[in-house]
Structures are given as structure tokens and as C-alpha cells.
Image (cartoon, rainbow, N blue to C red):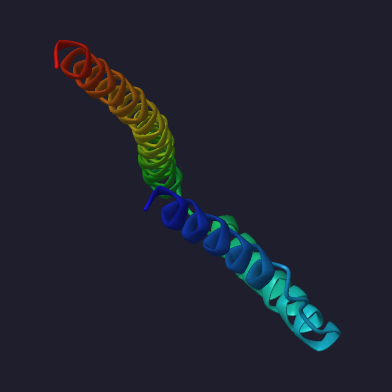
Length: 119
């Protein structure tokens, strides 16, 4: 089961990397650049007519967005670390189960040998 989980993770990451690697055509790049320039021009125009109150509210909104970004980054890192801890835990658990099974087999062999000697 652990191998299946690992295989699913590897395949999932491969698919996401391959999807991210798709190239955008030149027309789409030019269109995206034009849209970006237009949005930037509109933003500059809006800022040039903004008042001091607008700047202050924009500053508080930016601070709020930054704090949310830090929280999301922290939670993402925490989730990743928890997943890695679970993977390590399952590997350790599997190794412990193998060792326990080997010890049980040795005990069974000793009991069988003891019964053969007594008989």
C-alpha cells in the first residue's frame, strides 16, 4: 500500500510538472503582455487621481493581504511537514512490523525445537 501511495505521489507530481511545462504560443504571450500593460496603465491612472485616504486604505489592504499570504505559506509548509512526518512514520512502522514478525518466527522456532527435544 505504501508503494502505491508513493507511486501515486510520483505520478501526480510528474503530471503537474508536465502540465506546467506546456508552452504558451507567441500570440498568447503578446496578448498577455498587452493586457498587463493596459492594466498597469489603468492602475497608474487611478493612483494619479487618488487621495491620501485612498493611499492609506490601500496600504492597510496590502498589509492585510501580506499577512494572509504569510499565513497561507505557513499552513502550506506545515501541511507538507506533516505529510513527510506521516511518510517517515509509516516507513518506521513497516520496519517495526517486519522486526516483530522475525522475532515471532524465531520464538516459534525455539518453541518447536524445545518440543522436539522434550519428545
